[in-house]
Image (tube, rainbow, N blue to C red; front, side, top):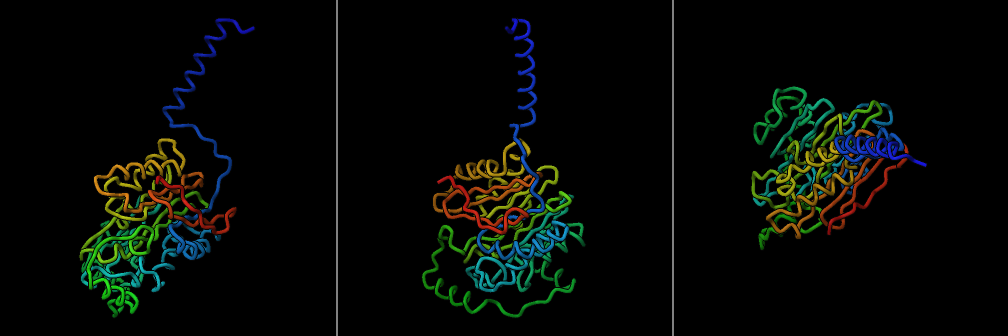
Length: 323
């Protein structure tokens, strides 16, 4: 029979354990270490993952994988939300945004870049070759050309030009949820050495005001990496992601002990409290923690993300959603 003294000692010990658990965040079991692993947003992430996986499966670095992976999407001129095939702004300009971040906290970004096939590689060069984080517009273009990038001469693809001219008839600005006119590709990866990196690239909102920049090239909004904790990327209506520092919020929630999916859900819940009418918008997040656990969550039904690892052979996952 347990004596009163033994019971008191046991209760004190249990309370101490509970206190430690709370200070470290909710305790969770990590049944396996899943690395390397790569996640990317939307169905076009499947092809991007394939290129990233070629690097990761050969024990390559996550930073190289996330750059190479999204280049696949950028060069697909049929994709109307990423790269030079994207739908233009209301003045007819196709402007591109991209950012990249490595395991050391190094990062680079370009905004409103025109006529360059791979803005993600320009962002990588900003990270590697300059003391800055962000270059924009003509300055970003000049930097790219000075570092060997080729200027493409066309303004819009025939498909994008046709869509823009049809839009001009009514000039109504109202993005449709889950339709490819307001999305991006965000990619995050954990390599075999246990290091995290991420990338994000987009042509932004279709028919946006000229000069508009969303969350995709903003470190802490569209993308964030903390090599001690995890990485996250966002997609959807960028203004709402910026308001809550979305990807940074996801990483901080993982630091507090939440699983990647739970962390994404918390960020989505914060978005849902926006003063804007987010019922007509889509926002989604993906995340990987340092253990290789992953997850995603969205505001609306219809968001999916691609996963590739040794155990998961590049599958498309439907994210849970708030509404």
